[in-house]
Image (cartoon, helix red, strand yellow):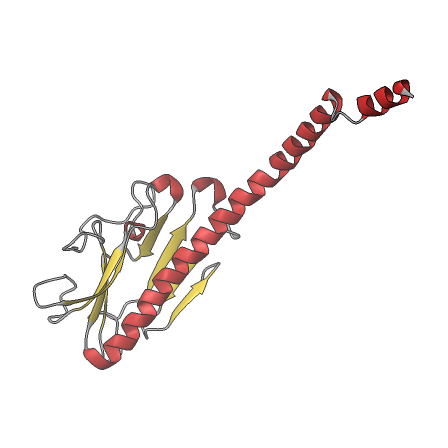
Length: 196
């Protein structure tokens, strides 16, 4: 009777080393397969979110411009500062994050495209990306601001602008690319491939 108790308690003690090694190998294999897919999902999600934020800001600016006058959205390197300012640094996806450094939206009393005394700050978008290795937002033509007039135009020239929401270099391509397109007639859209 004592021998039976000893054998049953011996077999109920826990995992063997081989069983534990098999579980660790399975977890490692699943992680090796899932991790790249998870990173790709995060990059695609970030591109979509950044495009949506810019699209939303332009849409809001259009609505406000229809009732209150010229609204400017400008790239800002210190958007979350107490007194933000428009940036003069040219957007370049190879050396800086471009518009992903942040932007400000304001009622532009004199429609000069700069945040001056007398202008009313409407919205502040802090930096979306920390470094160019995470991607960038670059407009074509390269513009530091967008002035949306209340009478139906964009700026004084009414030029169309396309913002490339550039993912990290390792993830460039159709699944990750996003473009925010602003036509000369103030139509704004988000697309995955060009033309808009």
